[in-house]
Length: 389
Image 1 (cartoon, rainbow, N blue to C red):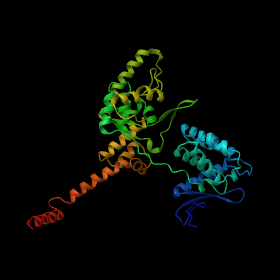
Image 2: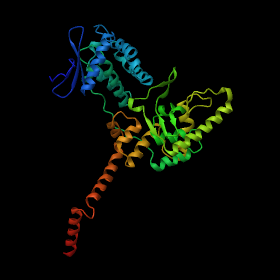
Image 3: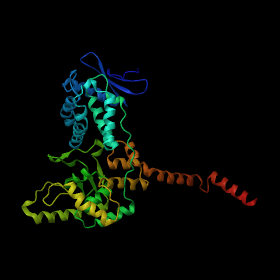
Image 4: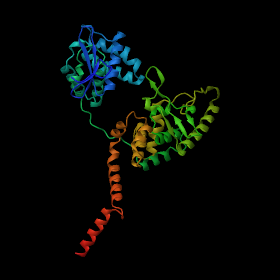
């Protein structure tokens, strides 16, 4: 067993390189949580001990998996997750796990039972990505449970085939913006392609977020519709997502025209207008219904432009792909997109990198074979010798 981290009596590093967060249980045993980094292990130890002190973790021998998951979803997941993420977690557990394994005693859930569940879901036609999400939620939930071993660690999630991100080429992006010219949501599409912002970030923009003098927009919030709850405003996805983005002249001009249209719309409806400050809103100033926007505006514009039927999120991928193809450093693209780590940017857009690699090496070769370089002189002398022979 490896050395414990200084000042962290419950965190240590194993000989295989993994970090372990270990906490004592009420029954005298210990619970171990395996992590990739020391920071993650310290965080997990703190979270588990805090949950234990708050009575959110159970050690009852008769508790079922269903009772534990129901409690975990309400007491732990809901307060700590974004609303849409929580709803997705709840749906995965209620639709796929609880009907099959909900009555099984928590400490008796076996790897074989989980593997059988995953296989069944794949046979029923669910995508590997969906089954992998089920596995991830179960694993995260059981990390909070005071049992000695997380059964999910003994089961492999289904392998998910890597899908290449769909993106518009430069020419297709131009065609799309030409089709969107004078559309009521033209500014939305211009911002999407020139900033790489997420759908919820774009629709969550308010006029107070735009600084026309300094040509910037601040990403401060996201907005989404939650079933049976209405529109919910939340913090950006990650700390890196809260960011300032430079606006191109194209984006600034489209926003100015959009503001004029919005003022005209406000005057036309009179007292029906409910001013809430949204840049992109419906006919009375309320947030936009995404499904209506996609159906009535976005998809028809794709048809009009004669470009592939992509999703709205693919506009974000288009921005990143186009910037990388222009030779922009991935670090800048990462900051623009609000990715938490540059590895996420590189992994997501790896399909763009091979062409960039070829261009980069060609430029390196040109640098090393300039007329003044010894390599170039040697090559030229060799060529002369061949001709003389």
